[in-house]
Image 1 (cartoon, rainbow, N blue to C red):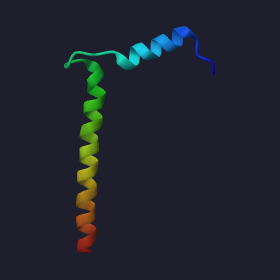
Image 2: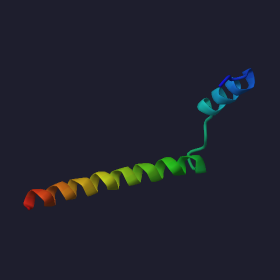
Image 3: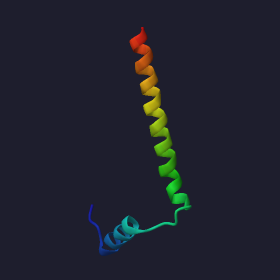
Image 4: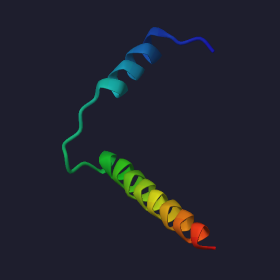
Length: 53
């Protein structure tokens, strides 16, 4: 796939774009981080209970 100068500028803009702290753009990252923590906690509990068996 060939990128035009327009695409290059657009990608550079999106990669360097800054959002306010309360922006919806950060919501997805916050949800992922919380799910990651829950997943790590779940794995820790699972490992603990498997050792008891």
